Length: 94
Image (cartoon, rainbow, N blue to C red; front, side, top):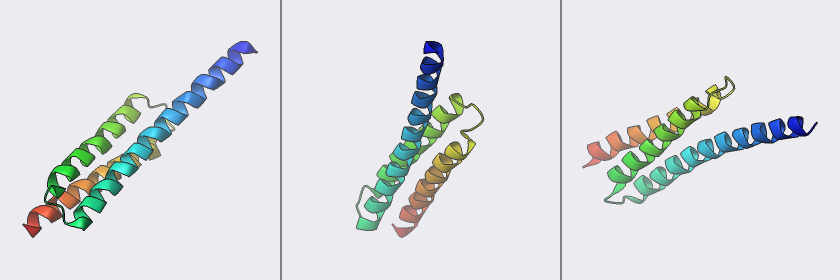
């Protein structure tokens, strides 16, 4: 029974770690969006950094993949793509 509890704890920790990565990706995208909307002169740099955070989160999720993380990986990649689209938008506004 003790082994079962340990296994369940490890599984719970794994899921929570994956959720944290998705949350980190979402927060990076939201930060980039706020910076772009504010018209900051460093918008492009912030968007690049945030896109890297999102892609790194997707990469870490992929490394920890157990089959149930595909949607989480997809969310991180969507956030990265949105950040990259904002980079192009900022460049075209210059």
